[in-house]
Length: 426
Image (cartoon, rainbow, N blue to C red; front, side):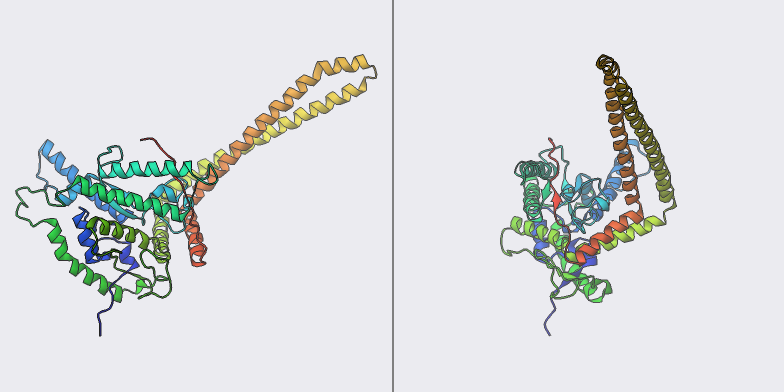
């Protein structure tokens, strides 16, 4: 019997790390100074970075202030602490509104937490760093898309254009890693680990064990059956090697230069997380997170307090609107009274004196009252919208939006058009 093709269940795909990449991908990423263990969904990459930031900060404080010794941060911790957790697909292109709000999502199944990400060394305001280079390219692409949008002024960002721009930013990120670290990904020696082997060799020696574990998990995990099979770089179908699983991600042109293979592997991972199966899995995890929020009493109290404030604002706005409407009615009644007085005079000169005396004041009152009423109506609409948005941000509201997205994906009619991010000068 031949050895079955290795697969990674969606649950592992959403965890990230070396277990989702083939040996060729892992080697190529390491050659380009990217540890495969650092690549995964945004919430995983961000959590790993925060742990590293705390470790580095604790050591720095101990060095400055003395006190109990703190372990010197490892190479990995120092690298991650100096990096940004960056999406492989720009987050702002998938939503209209604040981060983490599933009701503001434009692309069904996209969640900030489960989007493909990697650490990019540096920050957006330092152009020479990896994150600086990627951010600059994102700004240039956003500027170009807004200037060439059809029709002019449109913010629509179709999937094929987003993918084209994402591929460009992934290329920039890999090239920047190679350019900034020509000597490769290595431990920075210090007395405790000077004899440690290079990180490349350590990671390569672990690849087979990780892949074996991934294959075993794919075969044993009943949660693998989450929906149609998705193959990296293609649309999901129902005729894959294993239902609910994706193959270990491999370069599309094996044997090419390491930098090209690394780019293809990162693009493949991004594609794998954008298949319907992965989107549905991300929705399920997001729903589970929101359900846990239902049990958070402090969160419930905070929502209740905020909702009461929104209700007070709505009530105040509606009462002010009603009062303004009454002033409009009174102004028009004044006009009617003026008309009756005008027509009561038979003499043309008496009518003219009546007209000159009152019509301008009457018309001014009507205009002012109607202007105020329009402002009060807008204030009421704004207050009601704020209340609606608040209700959407509760666990129940977020779950309702996630379930609507899931229904569209299962029906084969997902929303896929994102939004061109606003161009911002560096």
